[in-house]
Length: 330
Image (cartoon, rainbow, N blue to C red; front, side, top):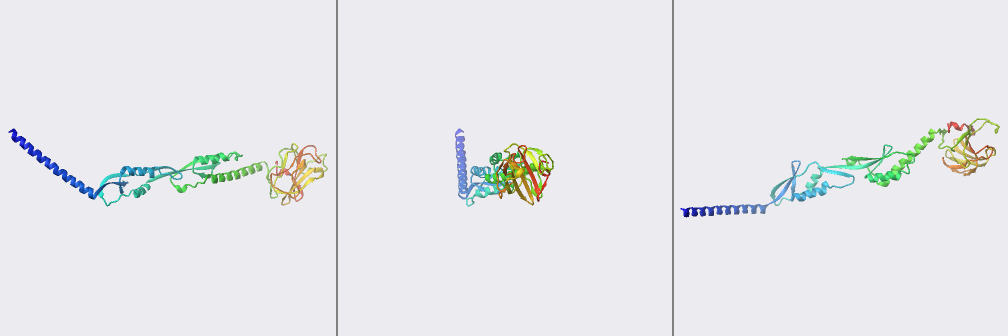
């Protein structure tokens, strides 16, 4: 009985082994046939749509990291993918080619890029833009010495997804632009300050600066024992040697001794307007010389008919004296 059971067991074991051998050979044959005709690749889909095949998921993810996630260009701040790729292992005909490059192009359309740049503002007014905070800070720092009127510099960080909004300049160009605007604003503020002091136009001629800083010691039209007629100008007391500035652009008519005026400088400004500067201790200009508003033309003195160092300042229109305080120190 045991002999019969052992014989049957050997028979079935042999048959089972034969079946698995045939199955293994058949499976191997099928695999061989598949390997001859087909190859394994990864189908790539974006937002559920298949866009091609890649040879290696790992290698392609590395390409995504290098070419998209680490994308670097001017003003780029951050890059994200709005749709991640999906992979599926497939066997395709060996003649089917992978297309990593075109898939990368398709994925670039899914890139969300944010750009960053920096506006330079002067008193909250945008003047120019540069690419980095370091560039903006360098410009601001370099112009602080020029900022004599205390204007406010600020730097505004700007972020956008539209590269067409970005219009930046090189550092030197932006610095020149900001410097020019600062100069214009400084000049305008100086003019406003001068106007606030009472400076005005004389027959169309702009009084740009005060002739001297000092104290009014005698006004236009007053009489005194020192004069045979009323006072034709404005006396401004100041220390001997104090610089006297011409109040507007013009041409020197004369510069020399003029009797009771002492050393006198006369300037013609056009439109019949003249300004006279009397009792000076020194004169720095000569007849025929052109001068610009603010130029130092003489120094305060006490020459001629004078009781102390001061500037005798006259304004004449077509030869007639007018009250200087209608235009300055009013």
